[in-house]
Image: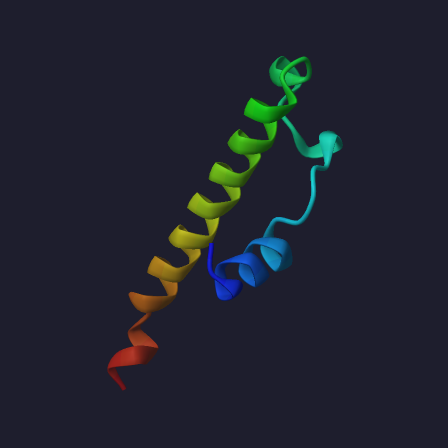
Length: 59
């Protein structure tokens, strides 16, 4: 990955945090961390979309 991608990943996701993983994946840390990363990325994308659609941008 690029340096920028690495910095963004560690700033937004960070290292593995089992306490935030879905319980049903506790025996599969690779998939659990992947699911957590996907969820956080989706949340960030939705927040960015909501901000972009904000009426304040048209002013």
